[in-house]
Length: 312
Image 1 (cartoon, rainbow, N blue to C red):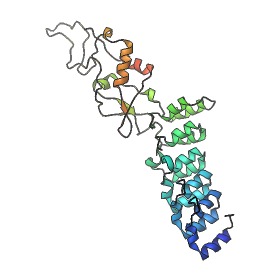
Image 2: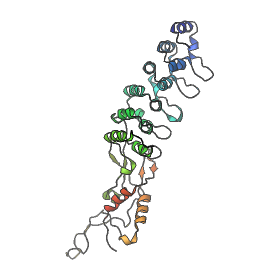
Image 3: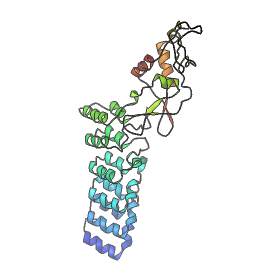
Image 4: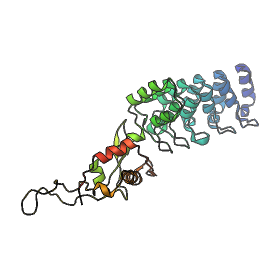
């Protein structure tokens, strides 16, 4: 196909069924026209057989996917206008057209798709590894894409992938370069946090509750359901005590019901404390599945500083 629109028009007028003909790679004429960016021919082909917008080639890609990968935005607009559901069809490994926009650095195509289909589920779709388009953009350090995504209110900047990492965590694990500072600033301004930023309060420990990253709003914390086994060493006070039974001031510090009461420090070494925290504090992902939480030393120290110790 060499882009001769008049020639294509003549052939389709005689044999319109050719618009649905597939080659050895299961590619249709529409796939080829979308790949080359021949907008006039694309219009003629879809006028004869619009359902070919949904046809997938041997690699699982439809003409919309091809237009995105090649960056032919005018062709993309024509196809999405005719069959918007074709843009929602996933490719291999669960990637959407938005994932393809990031992988092939097609920012204009991404902006168009998010303008046309801005629903929460689509823009926050995850691939088979649980990565959103923000995860991919950060991993590839696409500054313009990150800036666009972090200023879009529909994007979950703290979504977790299957490894339990946010976009900010992905940046911390990547090779360092001059873009990192700018990317960190963009992510932070957008409300991004890392898994290590999770802090559990004393009251929540006493109530057997923990917190995790939320899918509702940026840089917020969402209360989860109680987790089995989340009980601090020594338990919690069952009563309130400010004075002794006879009315005299209590010999030890007073306490309130529900506060954490821990046994004395000599019963637990620092290493044991960290082991207890690491094995008992968990959080769950957005699907309700438990995810292990590997707290850093700063988080452990923050937790320990909130405990009230008493002697045996």
